[in-house]
Figure 1 (tube, helix red, strand yellow):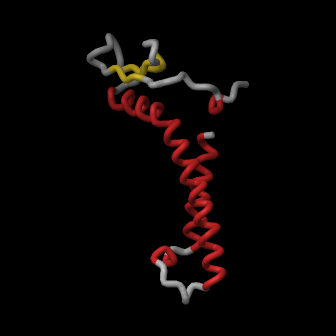
Figure 2 (cartoon, helix red, strand yellow):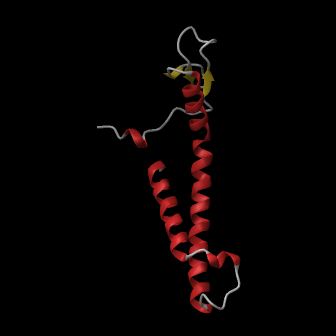
Figure 3 (cartoon, rainbow, N blue to C red):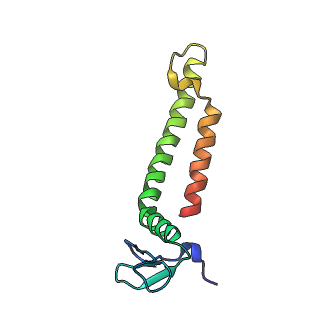
Length: 115
């Protein structure tokens, strides 16, 4: 059985072809012009193209954000451990460590879905 979630996708950039241009339903097309899929509305086809064309950049941004968030959590834990909550005058310190950890967990979970 093929693992469709990890299969290679058609390289982009994908193109949106609206209803009034096609002699049929709105289409999502590969750079070479062949159809990837047809949809029931221009809005759906445009959304598919926008999502597919942005996917790689969004995954890279999420990787970077997750790595930076992990670093911030680690630094925050060290900082809080050294100085204690009451002695620190820092705007970021009003955010609880558990909030940072929850955000990090959500970011890592999102990465797992797309990798």
